[in-house]
Image (tube, rainbow, N blue to C red):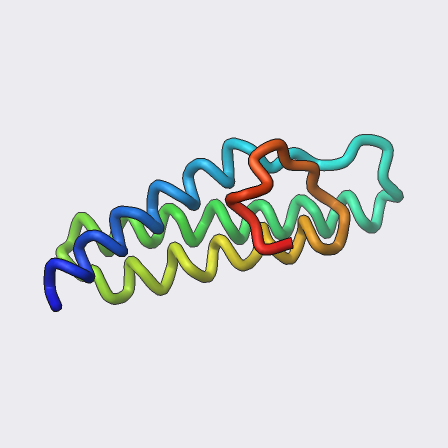
Length: 93
């Protein structure tokens, strides 16, 4: 089971990094939506940083949780239409 956790955590970290690099705010949005986009992106980025910290501390379970939650924020933003993406296979929307 440990090997599965190692592979999955590493994969989810990589996928979230790629998603963060790909997601861009839609230009010209209403200021309220622009603020929401900033919040969603910042949450995803914070979860990436937290997950990386947990990973470096050897806590793969919490790292995986963080990477998953971070990705969920970006998925929600794509569904809401506040992010544009080019790598659609990285997102659930």
